[in-house]
Image (cartoon, rainbow, N blue to C red; front, side, top):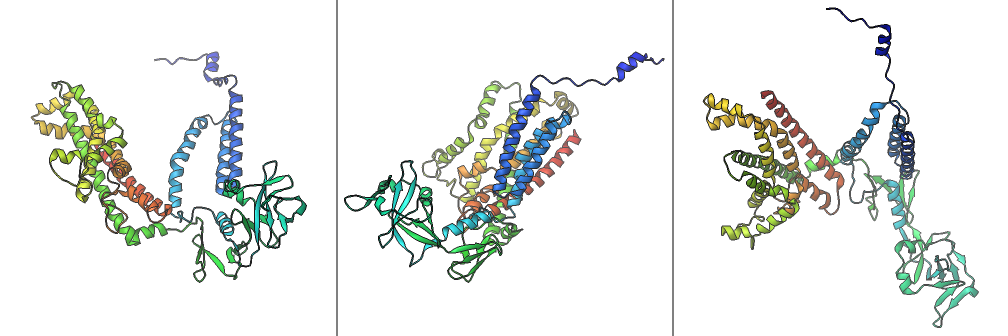
Length: 527
């Protein structure tokens, strides 16, 4: 066999690089325009992050913007132009929420600790403004100028007038003060006095803006007709990071996000701020009896609920799929449509319908069965009811999946099993079931993970009840509903502790899913 020899001209044509196709007209300008808009939004985000003193946010925005500019402002990095958008969305909607949830589980984020320290200091100082016993009190009239601006006209006990039009206390010209027949102030110069009704229509923010600054404090409205000079009780010492009570010099030290002094009154200053507390949330979960005992019982029930739900839904769905796989059955299409109706109906409504049907006093189930079963009030019947309703909601899904799996099995395999002397049950156990399991195993794993966090069925049907005396969790609560009650049901919100439970749920589901996928690969090897 002879080898063909290329001519010099042909060799040149073979090795010449292929020129990159030209860009369509206008694409370059479109890319530049989009980059300009994106950089403008990024600059706005940086300014917002700087204003909030979020330096991590500044760094993330700056690095992300620089990366996008480098990738899309040049003709290089062609693969990155396609991979970068998907990677950004993956980070924003998948990676970042997980990382942020883990971060919150190591903080005291919750009621009283929802803001930063600087914001907490501002609120404490603002809320500590109070009028002392010997504070000067003024009769206050709110004046409105022709431009719609408002200011205070103050009259002290000696009858002298002062105005706070410029934000500071200044003497008023008595000749400019106008009074009505009753002697009440009706205006000042070109400004008119607001009536009591008009004063009441002003928002708290608008009333706060009328405050007048003095050398010793702040004059602020204490009612619609009176103002008083307020003194700031608590003042922040930024050099030592302490809050000082100006009335007695007592200092409050920052302890786990709260200014605290156990020997003072009050012992703590609200609000606090978000800080890292290490593993305290996890420690509390496993050491506090009021949390540990419900958590263990809820975890056991969650495992049982998820396992039994998947097992019963799969078993019933596969059984019905095999029944209607018989080609000799008439009306199979009609039956199949009827069977998938529970899957097609809105879950929200059907669960509430089941709740009404299971009502002990006038529910249709007790009327049909001639019983007085407390379906949702008895602990064991409530658990059975949850499993029953979830079975009705979920078996059509497995019926569809198993129907497709059965149709993909070659008939020759079953015929070969019967030729070898296998009975119908043995052919199912040795041939049909393993092949169905290969196709359905990933669905079983995902269904287990879904039911492990099936918030709707528990909340809408039983609300986690019936309740357990002295415990936050009810008899049918699963980990997710238990987490919700921990987050919002203990006299306030405790997001840090709730996210710690969420992290544990994530780890449990990840471990179970990895084990399931390992067995899935084992079934694939059998095939």
